[in-house]
Image (tube, rainbow, N blue to C red; front, side, top):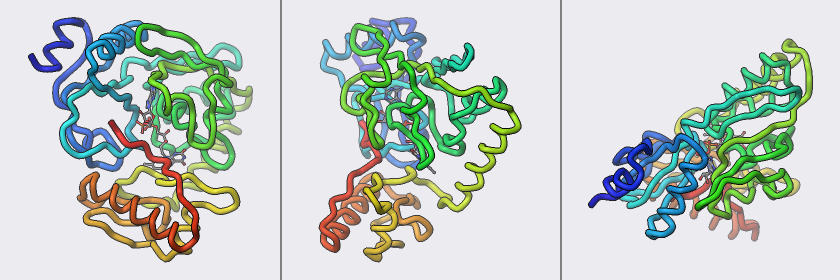
Length: 294
Ligand SMILES: Cc1cc2nc3c(=O)[nH]c(=O)nc-3n(C[C@H](O)[C@H](O)[C@H](O)COP(=O)(O)OP(=O)(O)OC[C@H]3O[C@@H](n4cnc5c(N)ncnc54)[C@H](O)[C@@H]3O)c2cc1C
């Protein structure tokens, strides 16, 4: 029996399908195929499916908007979980409840309509709330983890909340990148403000992003260092424009790798090459921000 057949037999009501093409669902636009995708309708449903997969030794991964991941080439005989059913948006005073599958644009529009400020720095970042929490996404002016008061989670067999402290947010880091815990949604603590002021700040952040490279990328590939951006370091090593197969280091922003019709293996080899050259030239080992899937 296929993996899809096995899942449908055990969970007939689970929204799931066969063959998930990573290239179509990620901003980098490459990678292979997964045997099954599933979009659970509730945290409880996800928790029981995760417990079943664990018992059977079947691998899985979580995917948001696919804006910070490098999926491997080839076939993944496992399950990709999507959070498209988790679309809650609710304001209660200064608290905003957001589902994991809500996009950054929808979150920011809703906050503005409800006169809630503080999340504008997320303007223009391609994301779902779940992915942004897992990655602790942000810019110099702020990070997702600073907004979070609680995160609602699921793991094999259980649903539970975590406080911001328990999420262990760090520089492009959180507990969700180290443990098999899915973000179902979160409660964000925002500030009351005027819609005109919120719109002005969104415009400021939108304008700042205009200079970023266009094309298929994962955003910044490496985490910035204390005192120097990873992009500036890569540029100092003369690596702008470096190519491997269909992958190229952007001429505009050296921390962006563009996929121009290549494979994940090309992108991965170029990441390795950049790391190696930077290490040779400066002795510094760059840490990858992008997440390998699965
Ligand atoms: C052009 C461009 C510009 C960018 N600019 C920025 C920027 O300014 N600042 C910044 O921080 N990032 C930036 N990024 C990276 C990316 O937008 C962020 O990291 C974003 O938060 C990723 O969200 P996502 O939903 O796409 O997550 P994905 O890329 O789908 O996933 C990222 C990680 O989170 C995990 N994950 C996803 N959803 C869940 C969930 N519900 N539960 C548990 N784990 C989950 C995945 O398994 C993966 O490990 C940029 C990317 C691009 C392409």
